[in-house]
Image (cartoon, rainbow, N blue to C red; front, side):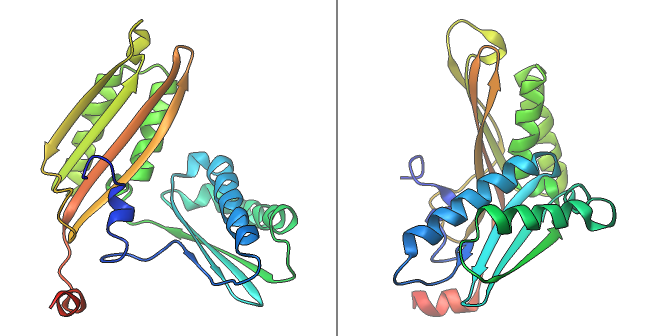
Length: 219
């Protein structure tokens, strides 16, 4: 099971909640499509800002979007011009109702402990034709120095332009995939090179989370 289930989704009932927080009876599919399109657009437009997560909260009167990024200044821009432009684009292209739109940009404390930010950096390196082994070793070293207890990196495809596709893995520490209290961050992306797509997956283990509420539920 640990190899087939997304580690983040696997722990949602125990450790975390959903990134989309709203309820709808009639137009659920429309709102879900809006959420997906908004996340894709923000991730593509703010690619260099190191977007970690995008939270969307909806009420009858307001849509609140919170962007967690390692470089929020690239999203905000000079005098908040780029943030205002992003807000107008989201309002025009994706918000079908008459709700008020609020966009918040939050800086993440430790980018090297965010699997999404780490994967985006690896994609940029691979697309710049940096050797994949050097990229993997540098990532593991940075994550280790940031205070993680374990990290695993898997890359698959025509690595360094090889004629036969293969899968390479490097790891350090421990990755307890079956322990529900384990705080494991996971992300995956694809780097598009002249030789084809290279898939990248990253697991980062930050330690166990012990919550009194969680213990009461289990009892």
